[in-house]
Length: 95
Image (cartoon, rainbow, N blue to C red; front, side, top):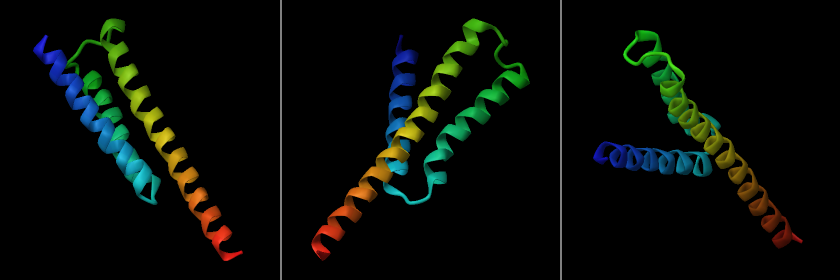
């Protein structure tokens, strides 16, 4: 039970870091570092045979990858909206 809790805490911290990277930095690649590392780690774990390639083992990795890549996309959308709102605010002040 403690291992599961620690895993959730680590995932939450990684998602927070990823969200901050996606919404604060100009380049979308910074926010993609964590999802790409998780994807590479997933591929490595299954390709090396450390975890058997069975549905019950693959499903949590699919969920994790989906969440992190989805968070990356959401963060980039928010960055674009914040930037557009800032530009609109600047245009309104110029008029």
